[in-house]
Amino acid sequence: GAGVSQSPRYKVAKRGQDVALRCDPISGHVSLFWYQQALGQGPEFLTYFQNEAQLDKSGLPSDRFFAERPEGSVSTLKIQRTQQEDSAVYLCASSLESGGTPRSYEQYFGPGTRLTVT
Amino acid sequence: TQLLEQSPQFLSIQEGENLTVYCNSSSVFSSLQWYRQEPGEGPVLLVTVVTGGEVKKLKRLTFQFGDARKDSSLHITAAQPGDTGLYLCAGGGKLIFGQGTELSVKP
Image (tube, rainbow over all chains, first blue to last red; front, side, top):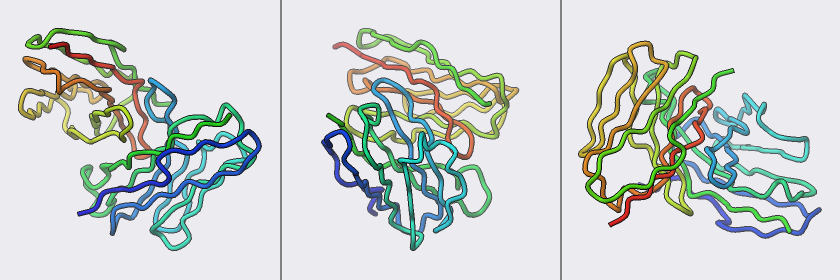
């Protein structure tokens, strides 16, 4: 079966431009997560959806970051007026999250979008 | 705030050697996961440990969850160049990741 896919894989933006990053989760997965990963570091949580509801956006670094999942499947992370410090890999993950067992919370990651702001 | 500390941060070894990576926290986790990430790819789930004291084996990889569910370790026996990558431990619902261990296995 298809895994999590993300597009584009690479994005170069000039400072001040808006960007939109897309995530297609595994079909049937209820939960969707966005993470930001700096070079050589572990991913850091940005935001979390359960179906179409954004339940936690505590990790979004500023109000320039916005995420949506309007129909409970595909999600888009939008960054407005990009800054150089936004350069990172943006990872999307999905999990089944049903059944209440620890394994149902396991997250499966896409390949990421590498954003470079020049 | 829950934090996960991994050590060592970097590890460079010869093919055939054994190694252990540690993941420690002052907080209790209901489960911990280990991921492996290669350059240009997302993390790939290796294992989930749930029960304190649990030991899981995946071929040459052995994962252990501490009795108090605050720490975990990953032991690789007879490392191979194909084991090269970034190893990450993670826990919690909105995963909290350690900073990772960059493993390089030289032939």
